Structure formats: C-alpha cells, structure tokens
Image 1: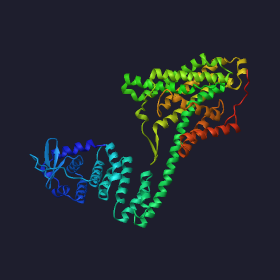
Image 2: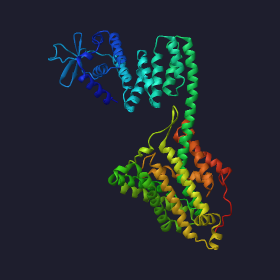
Image 3: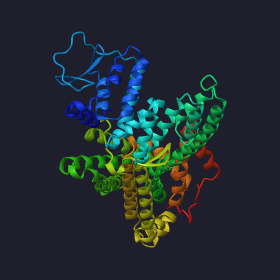
Image 4: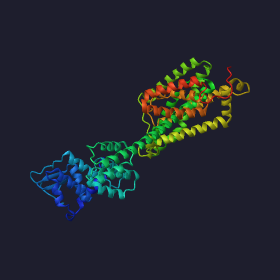
Length: 529
C-alpha cells in the first residue's frame, strides 16, 4: 500500500521549502557512493532525521525518481529537476546523469526506513500498514525512531505492532543484552510469525549466546501455550457459529417432523429461499435507498420469513397433507419439491452464486486474544439465533397455537377428538418451521455463498440435529446443534472436513442405536390414527 497522504505532504513541503532548509550535503553524497554500507548508513541517518525533506528524498529514491551526477543527487518533480542537497532547480540535466544502483539489501533497508517514517502519518490505516511492514524490515538503527512512534501512538492495534517491530529490530542487534530483552519482549506476543522467529534462535548457528537461546525457549513455550488457547477459543466460537445456523435450520424440522412425522427433504431449499430473499432486498435497497444500504439486513428479516412461510404453506397444502402416514412417498415427493425450488432459483437468479455483502456494522471483530478474533457477523448470528429460539419457545409455550401444536405432537387423535383443528395446525406449524428456516438462510447469507444448491449442504446436518436432540424437543435441538457444531470444528482441525463429517455421522448412528429417543425423550404418547 503506497502512503499517498505522506508522499503528497512531504513533496509539497519540499517544493515550498526555501534553500535554507536544505539537507545535509554529506548525507546526500553518501547516497550515491559505490559502497552499499555507505548508502544504508545514509538512509538510516535521513530516516532518523524525520524531516519532510528527508522523507521526500527517501520516497523519491524508492520510486526511482532520482539521478546521480557525480557526487550530486538530483530529484525529479514532474518536469522540474532539483538538487537534493540544496533544493535548487537544476536545468538542464547534467550530462551523464543516471539512476543510482540499488541492490536488494539497500532496497530492503530503504523500505524499512520509509515504513518507520509512515508510522507518524495521521491516517491510522497508513500507520497500521507501515507497522506491519516494519516488523519484517526494521533494523537496529531504526529502534530510536520506532520508540518515538511508540511514545506518540494511541491506537492499540498499531501500538501492538510497533512494540513487536521494536523487539524484532533489537533482535538484529550485535549486543547480546539487546537481543535478550527483545526475546523476552517477543514472548508476550502470540502469533505464528513470532513463533517461527524464536524457533530459529534455538539453533546455535543462528544465535551464539546461550542465555538468549534459553530465553527464546522460555518465550517459545509461553507463545505455544497462548496459540493453543487462541486455537481452542476460535474453534469453539466457530463451532457455536455453525451450531447457530444448524439450530435455525433444525428448529423447523423439530416442529414439523415432531407433529406430522414428515421427512421433508426440501427443508434445505427453504434456507435458500430466505437467503435469496435477503439478496433481493439488498438489490432493492441498492437501487432505491443507497444511503440506507447498511440496513437492508433488518428490512430483509420479515421478507425472508414471509417468503419461506408462504413457500412452506403452499408445499403443505398442495403436496404434503396428502402424504401423511406415508413416509417413503413423502420423502420422494419433498425431494422432488427440492429439485423444483432449485430449478426455480436458477431460472430467476441464475445458476451462479450471487453476492450478498455484509453491512459495515457487521464488519470487523473483537480480538479476545492476539491470534483469536471473533467476527461481528458471527457474533450477531449467534445472538440472532438465540433470539429466534426465545421467540419460538414463547410461541409454543405461551400461545393458543403453541398449545395446539404441543397437543397434536403428543397425541394427534386425542387432540382432534377434543376439537383441535389438526389440519390447520399442521399448515401453520409447517409454515412456521419454513419461516424459521428462511431466517436461517438469511443469517447464512452473511457468512457463506448464496446459490441454488446451498440448502443441500445443510439438510443432512439439520436432520442429524433433530434426531440427536429428540423429536419435537427445542432444548434437545439447541444442545445437539451446539454440540455437533463444536465437535465438527475440532474434528476438522485434526482430520479434515470430509473425514470429520463421516465421523460425526458414525457417532450419531451409534448414539441412536443406544438411545433411539435422542437426548430428550418426548413426554406423552403417540397414538396412530
């Protein structure tokens, strides 16, 4: 990333500066020396000066806008040629002027010096990028400049990177005490890069001082412990995030499968309906309310629910209600419905995945550890899933519809005998389950691709959650979704995604053999009628 702001500022300063503010002629002369060590020493001296003229000269040298004419260095600014030492305009260009030779070593030191100067830029993004680069290119000579930047820096992220860069710069020192202090400072970090650096110091060929090697070993153990903790935190959080999506997908199945015993193979496509609803609302906001684009997700919530609810009611009214008590036929019919919905999405939106952008308020994350960042979009999805679960629980336990649903779930024949409209309950319950799946699809669109086949990836996992948790049991669905999500993420880290899914499926098969009713057995009696 090129620091445009500082470049423009220093070039303007140089252009407007009077000749009295000229650079040290001896330093400029060393920049055109044949010896690379002379050039590097001059570069370090200019960077430590930290003046606009010095920064402009180093920037021009990096951009190859300088010419060497004997022991003079000339800087081009548009059509103007100036003497770098005096600031005077030179016209015409001296004969034989040519670009100075910079080998890779000199260029590396030059980039490090420029990065050290950019950490004083008022733009946080420029300082952050410079601090990242400085950790790889900082030399001991730049340590005083980094310390000055540390004293002025207030941003925590930039300050952390500068602290790391300061330690890495001192690690390249010839003084064993400076290297020892640097190793101890690096032990407070928790990044794989630092671990690699410290591992290299354990070799006597790389670090001759035994005390520094011992300190590197101690710091390495501390870093590995923190990296392990960060990895565990990241995997648990990723598992809970996956579990929240599975929960939203499985809540509907936990209701409909528990009431009607229908194996709905089109339930994954209801996720897809909700995701495409979010995409449609995003496009509508982009065309009509571009200033409010960040809030399309909020507006898409009722749209996704209504679209999936409507699709579920139509499916139940036209197909599923005629296939109760016929599990094989219902399975094949709903599988056919899933193909119809997939093809409809291809016709309307195209066969390729569509882009659903995250709002700005869902970007970024919380750094709980140096190597563990919890993204805001996944945090919000987990909270959203808990909110949907709470509303669903209140609906099923505190409303007349919920009482009817529970009655039909526990004993359909008796519920019908006492006047419960079982047919209407079936339709509303199926629509409710479909609407919840639509909300799950909208949440899924914020962390995954949206395409016609996206629902196929979650249908099997959703059924596993329902069966493992217990048919018709919300508490079981919550525990099963969270447990499967975390379990799958830890297995993926050890075996890979494909083997992890196979192992999860094998575990569920064994579990159901031992406990067919799932984690929570349904209270009451099923009466076939």
